Amino acid sequence: MRDRQLAPGIVAGRLDPAALQGNFTDLHPPLDDHEALVAADRCYFCHDAPCITACPTSIDIPLFIRQIATGTPEAAAKTILSQNILGGMCARVCPTETLCEEACVREAAEGQPVLIGRLQRYATDTVMDQGVHPFTRAAPTGRRVAVVGAWGNHQILGGGIGSVSRRFSGGGVLGVRWD
Image (cartoon, rainbow, N blue to C red; front, side, top):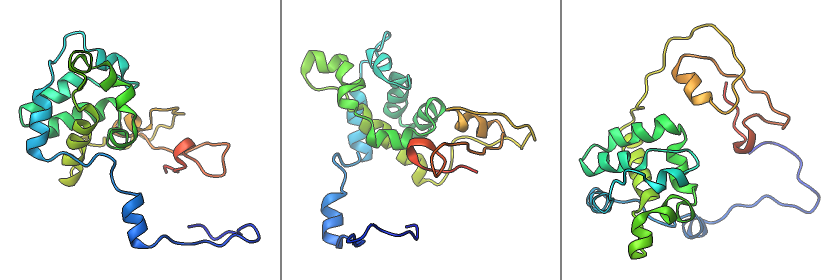
């Protein structure tokens, strides 16, 4: 936490471990290997895939689910992260129940969509737990460019990143400075 003055009468506090455990648990726990295979087997792998249309980042959802169903969650993670470098975080915070899962044909037919968000988390967590990143960063090129919203792809291609922000710290909404 930054060293800064708090407003008069405000005291910084800490939650006790029990409160932290109760307030910050997963709303939907991660899938184990068997649960992921069962969930992936429910996908119809639609050709026109309304789930892709509903996804703000246009991830190829049927492809990554097929990769999980065939036992290659690492390939699924690469599919996800190549389209959205923050795919692991988005798997936790994206309102999938009102986006891709709502558009899922299983939702319309049975009232029970494929667990797309949890499958996305399963794939990205599998890769992160292995401590391996699915992309190799290219050697620095020495060139500098202004990048708006594509820092991940620029890093993969070997570019350097600085930040420009009107806020007191860079990184926009996430408040992270990438240097």
